[in-house]
Image (cartoon, rainbow, N blue to C red; front, side, top):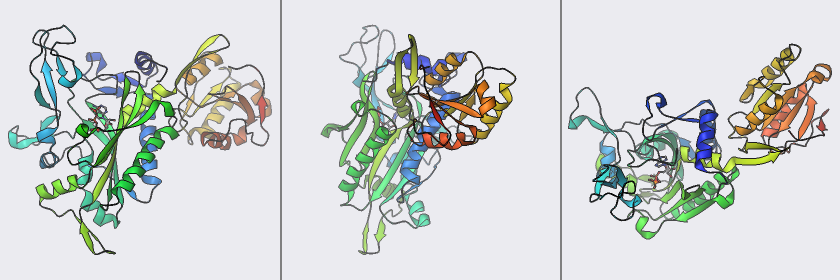
Length: 451
Ligand code: ATP
């Protein structure tokens, strides 16, 4: 398990500007969260890493960005209107509500009062389209991004002139009126998903299902999640939707136990068949080589952005003692770290400022940087450690003489001293994975204590 409890991460997130409660000054909005200056960078980095792995690095996947409001028939065809419900029970004494499958027995977990019989509660948020608020104007905030992909399948196939197998990827907001939210950003009412529908010829689906199970598991590992904290759990027969041929969850060992990060399913041809039936449009494809016509099967890896952010934060959190002082460090993968490089003049001395500003300007356009000249250098290092900044660049009085700066490595606490004119190239190489102790021309290792 990650070595940290949820309260510690929630408090770090608030203190350092990663994540705040939504509408906090009004007492909050249940199950909604706002990402602050560092949180938004981390979240963007997670989404970009996913997009790169799923779309840019592959020849067989393209992206789309569909609207959140859709024709309500979409949700009839997908059976969300009929079936996207959880069983709800009310406490007759304190009136609190619970998901029936989250409580044991028929007593309220809060006050011990008697619970009502379960009734089904649809999780879709409803609103009205246009000025008239009647039944005919009801539309839904999408509860998943996947349907925007299915209804655009023909558009994408015909305009991108692609053949199967073809994946269509999308990242965006989804909304679910969850009965009980909780565990910080793990279960909220407004969240983001990263979903991909991979359309294949029936008969090749088992192969591609295996392919995506591996790819998706490895994505988390490559970005730093410890393998011991990650597992692929096959769904039991009774958990499987009737049409699904197979489904696995990628689970992370969160502080509350193993819980779902992502679901990966072989959904057969169910979704396209349903949309074909309800829209009256033919959603089959014709394969030139074999002269066969068929409705593709689909493999769906469906991940949550917010749950990934939470797992990356928990897994990277470390506390250690350095020179008798507690050091908190987020060992985030450099790809995900909100700030890549901090530029720290040793002090605010007027002789140092021009050079420090010049150094900052020389790298600012290349990476997300932060210039910080307040408080002692030791405290500034600790601040950067706590938000996961991989490298700190320090400008001292000797820099004025030798035109060199010191780079400090977050994880090993080693320091190297290098000429300013190779700083940008050196940082680029280190952020791309070069070992820290590999020196550029003119560079040297700094010996001495850790800080
Ligand atoms: P759960 O069983 O935890 O409610 P689910 O099986 O309903 O999740 P899916 O419909 O498979 O979830 O959605 C795909 C992904 O979207 C999930 O793996 C999760 O990462 C994310 N997700 C779903 N619901 C929420 C939520 N309420 N808050 C945050 N992320 C969510």
